[in-house]
Amino acid sequence: MFFRWDWLRPQLTAPIVPALGPVHPDALTVDLFEDTLRAAETGDFLPYDKDRRWGGEKDEKVLREDVVHQREHTLIPTLSRRGRGTVKVFAYGLRGSVVNEAAELAAKLAAAHDVAGARVVRPLGPGTAHPRGTRIQLKDFTTGPCPAPDGPVRPVTAWPTAVQDTFASFAEAMAGDGLAFLHAQMQAGRCGPVLVTAVEDRIVGAIGPMEVRPDAIGRPQLMPQYFAVLPEARGQGLGRVLWRAAMLWGQSHGAAYQLLQTEVDGPSDRLCQTEGLTSLGFTHTTPA
Image: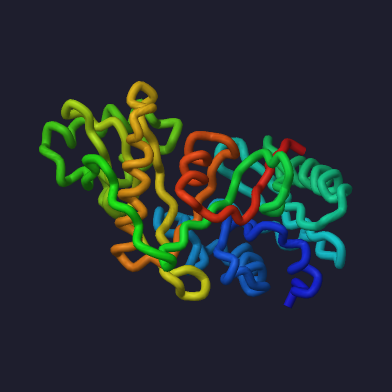
């Protein structure tokens, strides 16, 4: 075994695993980290990798030979060839110098692999004062019933054809939020249902795909969704209506929980905070 859990566990201030992303705290084990090393050798998706549902090949992989694992800190670099390529170094440890060490390693590896991006990903605990970056949030479906949405939300295929036909223009307008990619997956029949809301027979908001899959310890997890509302339709509570419809769908389809990543102080972050989600910590990504 490469990782010593008695070294690594105290460094894990937030439950995020390189190349996998956030995981449920109950699933946070040394085996997850060991699995990322094995996946780096084969290039395959792990069975519980959230990106596996999109098919193809795993893009981001751990640079196993360049991992730094010591008692007080651990640096785990990953490489993605998407676009012009990026090296990320996940900096675990409580010492302030760990970020500078991670930045130096990221820059060196970016040059060695001839990629344009070099980043440091710093996990931070839930009690961090004045956090920046991304908040990791937990929606636990086992604590009580999810409220029904107060508004018209249906799967896109349940709306009249004339309304369905407006999804293409909506997806194009919200391409920056991933909706164009989602639309392509929908057209290819490669994803679960997408929930939408419409105003005056035009789709103005969507969340999906809705899918439940087992995590690393076999618990059913509602998978992450793309989520967007047209700018001109915001301020009417439609985001909350869509989100509540998605959570009700997940609970009614047997999910035990969902993990969400929200930009600190952004609209989705404020929504989740008012809905009572549990903050598990943060990730702060900076250029090396």
